[in-house]
Image (cartoon, rainbow, N blue to C red; front, side):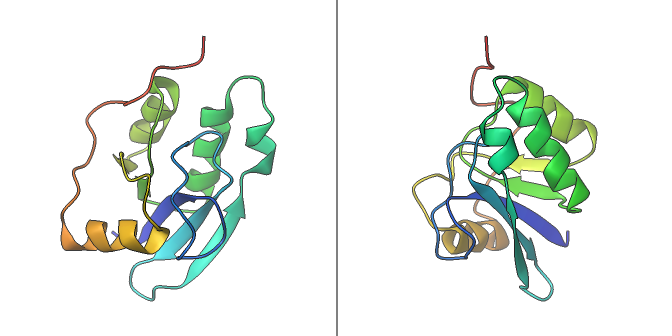
Length: 121
């Protein structure tokens, strides 16, 4: 696995993991081989009345991420991500992007087998 997307409240490794997926401020994309990072702003998805999760999923697919680290993911976004082979690790809110990456690299996280948040109604 080479690229990881992490929902983030800011552009750096020391910013906090944003617990929201579809309405996250943005994504820190990390190349695990080089540890290079880049930031994708999620501003357009944040203002959508519906479909924010699907729009956000498209952003990380386009970024080439193979895994998502986040807090919560709804059912539609979960389905969209897993349909294209992106693994999802949830419940990582309350820590920094760097801490979430360290947990992932150490193998002390579990890949989700279902969404952990109800969808939009």
